[in-house]
Image (cartoon, rainbow, N blue to C red; front, side, top):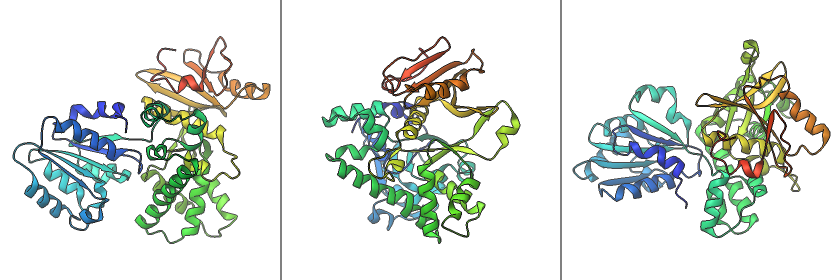
Length: 396
């Protein structure tokens, strides 16, 4: 597996601190690999290392609470600074108390988890000032190209737009095997984990709503619109239930929702948001007869890439004229529109129209899959194949 230097570079300066290093992200995005890569780097200077993977039933059945974890570490650690790696720590009852204690006794503690409750208010209050957190995501295209070279395969941009960046899928030779892997992964992290973790009783309702939400990537959505959808098949579905289900998806890093930014504060307060899937495969797995939703997946991919680059991302709405993204970083802002193609006149006009009344002091960008350059005097066109190679928009 490639070294994910973008993340490792952020974590390295904390290797020897007593701060708890929290590495979070959706299941199978590569957290354990990064943990292994950190461990290998530390091995170059120390052999005082302990590693526990709590997805291993043999381990969790013997070390299932804070006291047992602390006792195990005390028995097995060597003298001097010990580097402790705890994979999927959320499986341990009272894990926060355990790591809070361990950090006080000359230990450098690294933990991973697939649930954002690792960073919920109850734990961040307990760990206040004692932790640093790092969010890991599935591979972006630059990483996929690097990994593909290692595996001696080719991965096209279209493949990325349809099947996304979960690292393990690239190890399978056939598309059928990849789809099987992704389908089983979805069943595990979207359905089985959440149904079990939250003891969901209305399973069919839950599954139906989750399918609808993950298929609605790159779209404006609200709890009320989801309720209207559910009424077609299920009589009893409250707004509170829908809000709760959406929060479960967020906690498991399956979706992100971003609220619109508007020049009018009333618009900011409206209860609606745009949904983005953590990986576009969650949309594509539901498509029939190879009719993949490339238009919305492309916007979702651009969102994921912008987040990877480190931008703060909002939807921008100006009196009903929506721009896909208003992004910012280090005092710089950019308006961004995303379209699969603007070859047709109607599409060209529709995509450029929202830019017309916007402040020209903010850079305006349109990203499409076209090979022709459609830049104007006020709008910069970036071809998707070029955007996916970029580390930043600063040099435009």
